[in-house]
Figure 1 (tube, rainbow, N blue to C red):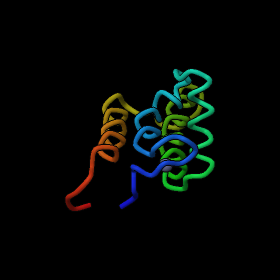
Figure 2: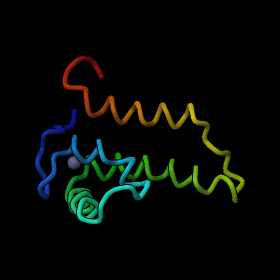
Figure 3: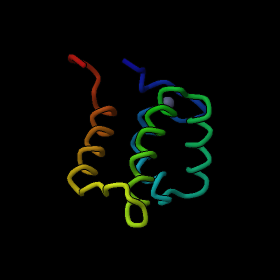
Figure 4: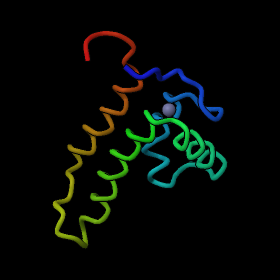
Length: 94
Ligand SMILES: [Zn+2]
């Protein structure tokens, strides 16, 4: 299990994951965006997770113009729940 309390580039992984959806939606302040980017550049755990979430969100945004099936709100909710779960999971099986 990844250590989400790991401090990289001034941010902990759980902080980065908590901000991830806002980061991808462009809702974070530029200062925070730069901090998250710096973390992602050095943290493989968050970079991988971020890439996965980013791919889904990109497909979702492109869904209007492309043949990619758009994600439902339900799917997006599950994705957010997965992020929340990754943040909150400290013990227990998988
Ligand atoms: Zn991280």
